[in-house]
Amino acid sequence: MTTLDRTSTSTLPHLRPRRSWVGVLVGVLLVVLALTSLFVGVSDVSPASVLTGGPDSDAAFLLVASRIPRTLAVILVGASLGIAGLIMQMLVRNKFVEPSTTGVTEFASLGMLTTMVFFPGLAVVGKMGVAAAFGLVGTWVFLRVVRFVPVRQLVLVPLVGIMLGGVVGAVTTFFAYRLDLLQSLGQWSQGSFATIMQGRYEFLWIAGAMVVVAWIAADRFSVIGLGEEFATNLGLDYRRVVAVGMLVIAVITAAVLVTAGMIPFLGLVVPNVVSLIIGDNVRRAIPWVAGTGAVFVLACDLIARVVRMPYEIPLSVIVGVVGAVLFLWLLLRRGSRAH
Amino acid sequence: MIALENVTKRYGSQTVVDDVSISLGEEGVTALIGPNGAGKSTLFGLVGRLLKPDGGRVTVDGMDVATTASSTLATTLAVLRQDNHVAARLTVRDLVEFGRFPHSRGRLTVEDRDHIERAISYLDLDAYRGRFLDELSGGQRQRAFIAMVLAQDTKYVLLDEPLNNLDLRHMAEIMRLIRRMADELGKRIVVVLHDINVAARYADRIVAMRDGVVVADAPAREIMRPEVLGAVYDTPVDVREIDGKPVALYYG
Image (cartoon, rainbow over all chains, first blue to last red; front, side):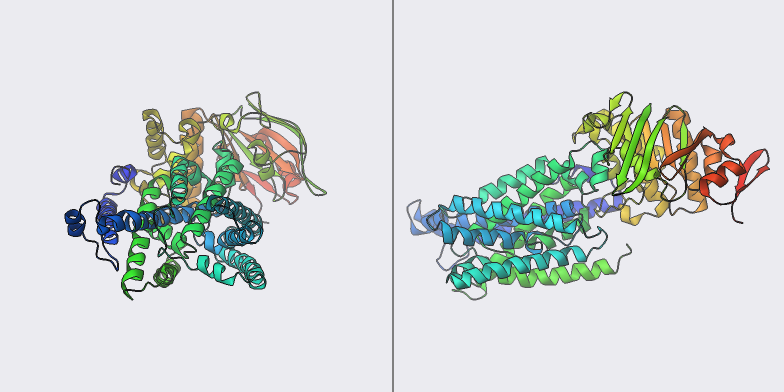
């Protein structure tokens, strides 16, 4: 992470130590939390039990079938949702948007409901495809609508998104109610990693691939974040970059939705915290956002598993509480700064 | 040379640029003046391919703006619009780096870095390179944007009201800088200005627009006459000589 952070070497000296310190901290936390996540749970799986038991022991089986997939899933979800939020904030040029405040998540879950009603036997990859397509439509609708809102109306933009999401969510709930599918709907709308096992999380690698796409196109997203006129002046095909961004957002949202469910606030809080420390240059921010997002979800998932041992609290509850507090802090902090 | 041939732009039934034919960019600094709504910014938008004309053709060094690849044009022509609102938290250095995008496509070479450093020094921003744009004063931020178009290393630079919201000192500073960029670096700069005295002092040529039409186009001194300025702005303007330089008095 420190090697990627090349630009910080040319910035003001007093900022340099602080930034690399935070970078190291995020890296260490990521490793520590990931290891902890492997060995926390109802069954006794510890490094010692795996080593003494050998590859055929129950502990080793649990590690491979449940704990490793779960930890990987948590990291992938945290990293990719953070990136989805970051890219969305660049496209909209507003720091208060992310898939769940713009109706994208709601559209994707309407897509999920549609597959349940019309193609109940569809494979998970098909469900994800339909959800991604709906998410793409949702992103497009949102971008169309906010075109009529001035860029400087910072709060109005997410407000419009939340209303849009509310409408789509209400439609989804209505049909789910009429078709007796409310229970299934409840399953996705509460994000949780409790059911993640080997064979049930692999689609998240597609979300991971989207992070790579975002990283490759990072400079283009930074330029897009300056606005259409800047982008055109710099010879960038604005529409094409926006289209790539929309695809990244929709695929990540859908992949997370079909595997873990809705996880609110993450895409909002993580890029904003990172932005405070190192700014919004996407190339520089991506490893930070991915790392911080992973740490955030790992920590929340651990809390969700430990608080009511041997039961689990849905992850979205923990993320919602922690995220909301962080978000409030960001809002109040921002308000105190000169614009 | 930037050539406009019978360029027309309409918004609904209103014609904002009306059959304009003009060539720009032969002189070092050309000032574009005219009252609000004269079509100056729209003209810039048309040249900078930010707007599509309803009629006519714009070429930059023989390249048709409508058909040439945007990335090719970006190495010849840079346009800085007014009221640049950047929501993203970027440092001065980040912003200037993006100016190299047409050349580097995101992978900075040694030459790119060289251009970036020179642009930062030229605009006297060395001390602020690591600062975020929202931590700068208006004058510093404007200089950062100009450093970005300077790093873009284009022959033509179009600046739309770069003096907006700047105090006297920063106004003079930016204009001196524009003059230096033309004289020392051989840039061809077209700049929209509201203060005709500033235009007369720093520009080689003044183009005056009104109601979407070019109404006057001449060396600065010839424009600075009461009858010409009066017709452009539709208000009485007195012109006096002070130390041999024409000064327009329009305060009534």
